[in-house]
Length: 438
Ligand code: NAD
Image (tube, rainbow, N blue to C red; front, side, top):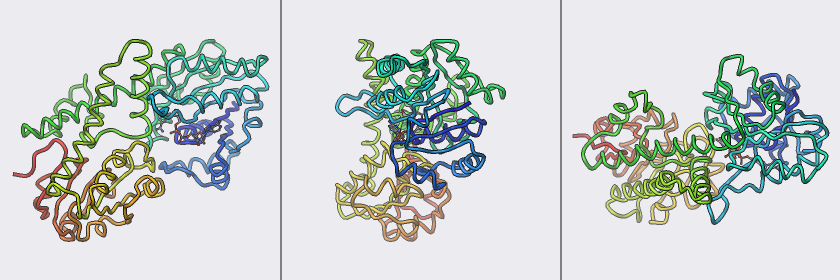
């Protein structure tokens, strides 16, 4: 099967590479010539574990190629996937569909025979029908169907998620499109991964509902964590205690500095807007957005308290700024709220992140980048663990504490235990939703 993938970001590139590994012929298109140049040179423009090896294997096998020329890539394709960005539109919180519609129009003009135009980007309900109209208008002679195929992969574990999904969701209007989609995903179907085939609107809704539910779960435990701190309970115990209930499940119950990343903030915001537009306000989601913003501000206050009420003149080492480990993605990371507040308050910031510097340099002005947590802690007043990279999970706490001018740690990912921190010589140790060592 010949597949075209439009957009070589986190989703498009991973999907394209994995489809080629299924045995399909895949051409990936991006309008950013720098990305295509890198890809053609065998370099991966993003950090995603395992992607480089899988990409190399399939390029060598002749099943995977990259181009900026959309028309030649679409020519003869049986399925054209649109995997471009759908960021938050400035001003109103809606998903910005400019890139999706522009891609749809370009595809329309390049179609040479029947193809399924598949939206992989996360898009509001009704978008696939709009894509259909845009294509039909741009090329009235085009023979095509549209399909919705939202993506659920997680950055940092994207290949495994794509190859071993909990489910694949496909929304179609015709059997013909359903057959093409079934053929594309046949390798997964053969291995018993469930494929849900449904209508366009349900498929579109599934993606937003899934992300909003996960964001709600995180926010719920973050709010419970705040209460735990006040009443002397330990949120890790609470998470374990509720997560063992199968009806609740143990995932997404880790208290922390608030959710961020390329999906949850923009998708909750878009869902809230969709609800308002249809006069069915999504009150839970609206509250989740508000509470999540407050969680980040609560973290800043926690840090301020640890700095005796003022950041001014303090040296603070921040470990981790990407929105989660194993990615270089900085979009809407909690660090983008927390670090500027520290800098703005007069602190000297030292930042260590295994992959975040390339993106982070422009986003976090006024900080000093280092590559070693112990160097960052030298004569520092406070160490903040903000992203739980493996590199920061097994620090020699004694060594770290010894380097600091005042050994204090804010562990915003609950990586360490209050007891271990105390034993290692930290005068102060604060985490999220847990009391200190007795
Ligand atoms: P991204 O910003 O990393 O990549 C988008 C790419 O599309 C860019 O390289 C851009 O240059 C390219 N592009 C834009 N318009 C184009 C055009 N007309 N022709 C060719 N290329 C074009 O975005 P992403 O993180 O991969 O997300 C893509 C979509 O997938 C979004 O809707 C997002 O919500 C959804 N999604 C993302 C994730 C994730 O973890 N990142 C997970 C699930 C779903």
